[in-house]
Image 1 (cartoon, one colour):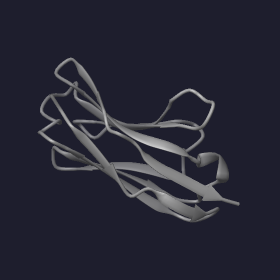
Image 2 (cartoon, helix red, strand yellow; image 1 turned 60 degrees about the vertical axis):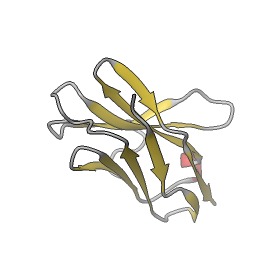
Image 3 (spheres, one colour; image 1 turned 180 degrees about the vertical axis):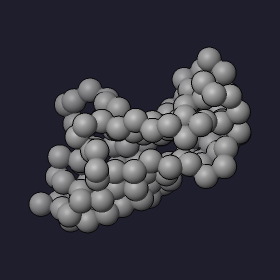
Length: 116
């Protein structure tokens, strides 16, 4: 089992920045197939991928956030999402996700609200 705890959400004006953190309860990045990432879900919409990062440091971003968001990891348990030039359409609950040893794990989510 893996527990994921997100932090760093909040209210910010359009054009501002926020940094989300995700702490895993155990080492995640042990094998090349291990992946951590961020997803988001806005009211009335499906959950969508924001960004992912692999054990080897390969990253993937949704087109809507390319050039504005940056995912990074620190060691084997921490993942961050640096969000800049935020837009009102970035408003959503952001969830941390881990693919580990065949399991798919989710955090409880952190709210990000961008005001216009």
